Image (cartoon, rainbow, N blue to C red; front, side, top):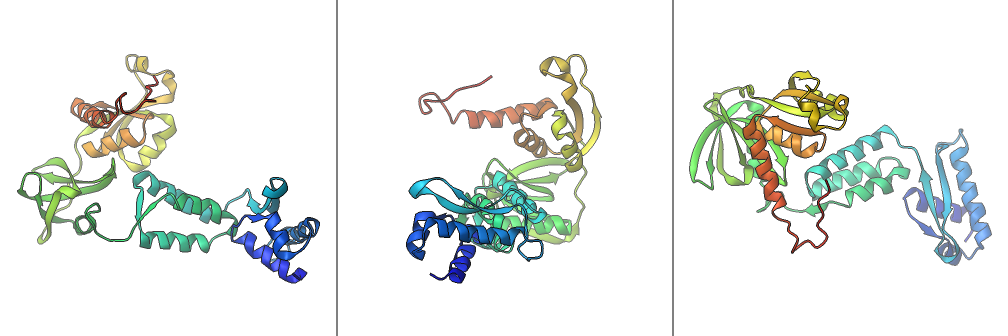
Length: 318
């Protein structure tokens, strides 16, 4: 293979995130390992010349491994902000659900392919962790119900629905939607009180265009012990009414008193559960007691799925 063709071939392999086995390159090009090494050095000069469009001083083709297992790979220890944003979004979705729709998968693949070549392997490794769902609506994903509820929230319209488990019809003000514990949850206001229900337990949802009602403000204050590492994040996401240092009694339950704060947050019970679940061990519900009991009950349901007879390596670390 002529040098110009080799360089183009190697270059395309590298920028597409491929690992090029050195022995395989020797066989395909019918050139020595020394010649291939010089070719790779020529491409590397591409990345170090500031006058060339591919200039990036952090990018380099490296030979990894030895003997027959040695391979060339493009490496770059820097990232750009677009890659940060894509990675952050992927990890956020990953923390919520193990499945994404095939159209979402295609959207991310297009986003990644249009980004930096050096970041594609890293970003694709995260995307490949998801299971792909082809149907927009199936028995496991309540897509139609979620869309109706979200429209009602945006329009600030009241809704009617049937609760499958009780066979009751309810007319209420929608408050919020949330994904937690591998289920979608709907919070609604009925007579000034907030109730939570799984979206999969709803049917016959309709939006009443004749009745507009803004969602009620949450009056219940939830006391949460918060580590300072996540305090600013919670302040940005939730309605923190009050914050203070720990008192003498509260300080007995933590190792380093100065690392913790007490927040009073105006939020629904489901929001409180979400904070305690997603932010553990950096957040714990302290009051009201009904919220504490409800959260412990949910955690107990998860805990009871495990026992020493089915999990031989089950260990509780204190």
